[in-house]
Image (cartoon, rainbow, N blue to C red; front, top):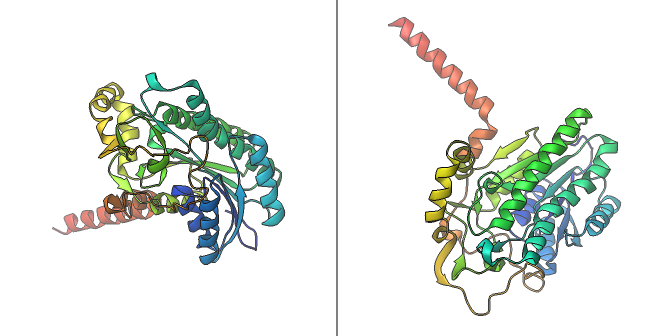
Length: 334
């Protein structure tokens, strides 16, 4: 956690919509200064308005994280205008819903450049500034798909797996150097974000997150918590925990299970419209602000009890110990 006397400075990539947008709000509610990186100008301006309404200060930085020089330039502007960066959150992503046999090399390249290399470039920009000060926290926004891949999202799943390996390597190096800079990966469940309305898709029906679905404020609060605690990794919500642990125990069985269920569970019953646009190469929210939430508000959960338990495990252990002590005492009195 930062020891500065003034407001905390955070950078959030993918801040124009979805989890990144909600994360910017979470920092702003605590009075942070927030650098907002994304491509969509309308979404960025909407995020700026929200940050300022919550009491924070925002710096809008239209940035395609697929370009290392653009990320570096944005980091420099943040430090010049907001101050030294305390927290860097890597959340920017794109995806393609498609069978691998129908994907193009250009699509794989683009998803990898944004979702994986964008995280690498953000991490490098943050380390360049944090290491000389020997403080700061980098948070990678991951997914249960970093451990358990699903059909129809091979490019995105591959990127999340890559982020997992990259992050573990960097963490080991920081430990070796006895650095006080921290790096954490938060593995998310399905989240109600606008991405399902603008992701590139070859599915016959509109894409959807695999239920159960959580509101973006749930991961946003988890990301903020992770940025201020020393955890290697945070698994958010029981569906993510189940997928990660299940893949360790029955990976082959899950391959067959997902072959049966993974196609239908990622689609609604509504056919894709003829005028559907996607944001793979160009932003969809350049003229229209989509906000943090997607189209699944009525089906989305506002909290995760698993996350509450995970972040209060010391208290739960103490309560369990007290319970056992009380039970033992009662048994002796009989």
